[in-house]
Length: 545
Image (cartoon, rainbow, N blue to C red):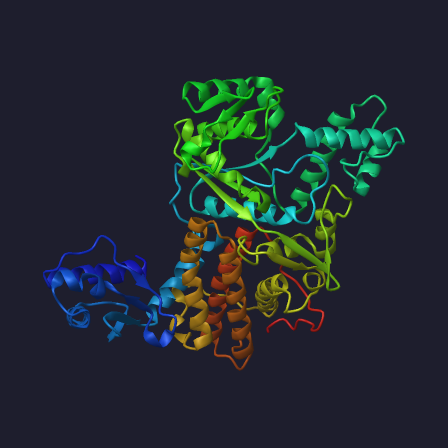
């Protein structure tokens, strides 16, 4: 049983002994300062009023009662502040955590069953097939894939989906731009002027339609760079396919039957104001042309039939689109809460201190493939996931391409490689690790060692919270702090050597196995690799750290 559940059970027993009602949820948290204990509860503050007691007095009664109970882990208790109860634990609980993590391995550590038997569709990127993905698309791509990984680790059945916007004005402009280049004519002013247009135009066979060929060429380019980033989609859902299948007409009929639409000025409108939108939205224009909204409504209905939960990752320019989509869903009888939309803010790409502009239309474009080629897929993914998507991000190409500690991905991967290097050296000198049950973990007393195990114990909570909040940057933050803890351990603690007691070497070797588990879980969730060997630009690895 997890130590938290053990403590909660002790608190429940103590409350019953005092004749008090046990709350449905007992809140435990880690104090920010380890000197204030390993765990703290506010249960006395929560129950004091109903118990007609001063919170601090109630906390004191709980402490006295708890001290009479036998416990393998609780060393002492302390009443703090207005009525908090702090638990100071024996180191034995940390040793149990380490054994559990090593025994579970990276496949099962920090894995939960919260989403078991639930299906979720994570739709992300969904760029128009009008050219290659640019560097700005990388943020939503990496974010969406890591959200999918988090949900998978939480037990969900996850489908990654790319909605292909392959109809409408943008596609026509794209086709006319290609056709103009093929004919040796000027590209229309409102067309696409990126250098790739001229390059792709030279590849078009004479008997191919520029629109069909261009769409395939764009999708091929997009799939290739996404694959390079370790991102694979389960479905590429075509907007055109819904028009061809009659789904659009079906949706129009459903909206009409639900009294959710009306005709005005020759157009068909969605009554989105009845569901919280600031104005009604056009579904079909007066000339009979579908707006972008109508196929999107049909697409979301299709997804709602296929999954209980929908997660969309949209760009910053789509923020205003959320209310109308939720309005459409609700008007069709579905709960709007089933659709969760995460909006990624802009990426400011910099090179040599200068901002690089991103636009497929004007020709000022840095392709995502260029970024991946320059800094590598791991560095690109890690960098895009460094901070919350709610904030604008600066992507410094110069820093990200360096193999130095200031580069966050290098700092984390180097921590992993240091352990693998040590283990390789251990094998070369004939070191034989003992079975888990025979390792004397009481030898782990140094604060650097205990900090690592505490961080390892936090990982399941971090994963659970990051999955619940759809916030993979929390994993990135944990990894960076965990790597810092590992580098600090290497600075102060030796693992191999004649001057290290054999039993301590065994314990520290087992600790490093646990650290590997944590690093592997974190890096897998971010979609980055765990290299066994690395080198720094400013230092040659020595093997034992």
